[in-house]
Image 1: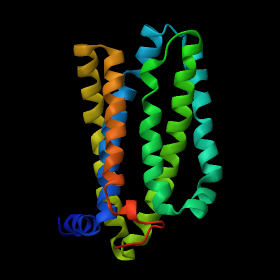
Image 2: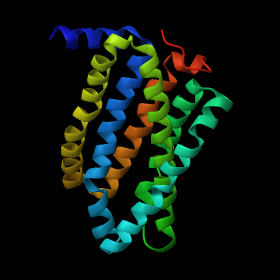
Image 3: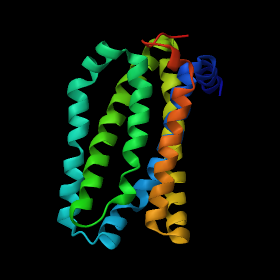
Image 4: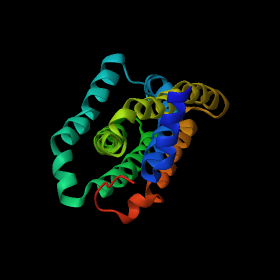
Length: 204
């Protein structure tokens, strides 16, 4: 309990670290709402076969690969702080296209959304983790990691349950809109934090 308290105080004591952690939890919740139903949505509502769903999902991950290759250059060019909150906004905006996925050319909505969402989440992870490692004292890093991971991964089952309940009550496409709105709204946590006034990620 003492070590948990140490981790909580370290996260709470740094406004940027707190914003990064809370954003991770909120965005994880709404992402899980989305993930709980999106495969069923693609199969039932859009009418895709299993191989087409697999191919579609694979194509979107090119965004993650692109982010892995370019994240460092993005940080050097615009600054780590701007890259962090900018990636959160991009991630949220990308989700807005998912509910418009349909047959034919409307499948492009899913591909574009998936590309920029996977790009944004990798950039978020790169700069969020980099800041966390520099902001936390070495002896507290493990405890800080445990707090942030508990927040992020603890939100997943709750989001999944909410996704199923919302889809049952309102339908899948409406639930995808709700999830998208939540992911975008979570970006405000970073945009309204001290990150907005920074170029680079400076602990404290």
